[in-house]
Image 1 (tube, rainbow, N blue to C red):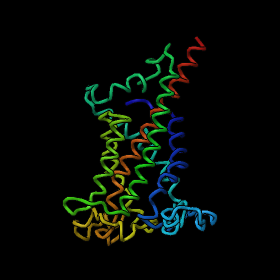
Image 2: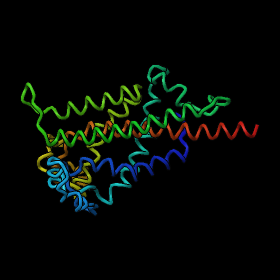
Image 3: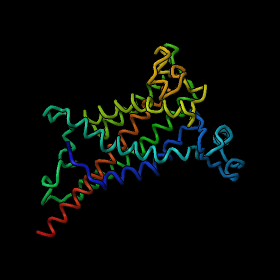
Image 4: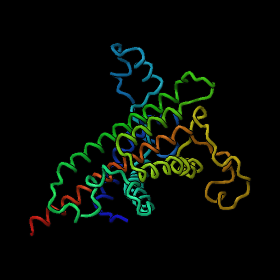
Length: 284
């Protein structure tokens, strides 16, 4: 497993703590309501009451009165999540490639050096700049995907079968993001695990009233088929655990968040490795 430097952990935590809630807030108002330590910022009256705004924007500010909607509990949770998704989970997924280098995309063999010895005597700045641009693009596209989830949640697109297809459209967008910005099987595995485990990790918070999904979006009850009376589940989630509801559209959103955390982790890793290599070159 690749070594993990504390600076990478710290940068991922700070990014998740600060940027994470802003991106997460892009779809919160149409999905859930925070019951514990809510943190909301209303639209400025100059905007919400402006006669200059196009009608659709004015209607949007009236339907969703908050510019930012989150909870004080979210920043530390997302800080920890970015450490797991950007540092720990990718390294675990990389260890199971069984010596098959095709498991890692060839484009990252130089841009994401395995250790400092691989880059001694090598100008790391172009690689680090490319990783930085890739990370910024990953964060931007994740924000767009999360905003798309709000649109798909609030607009019924025409379908051939009559079944909702919002999750499929969002999953297609997330997979496109992976194919363009990463392309490695290791990252795909990490993001897929996150898309399944991420929503499930919310169950304790929903069960204990930190937040709750709105009736219009709560279409996923992962424990519905389990029988009542499981002592472990009752201890963790309460007696009514089969009734706990999430939103299925958050799965692809978690996939996208994992991709931008992985991209950020690569950038932070390479930055530290480049600093160490430069320091060794100066001292030699």
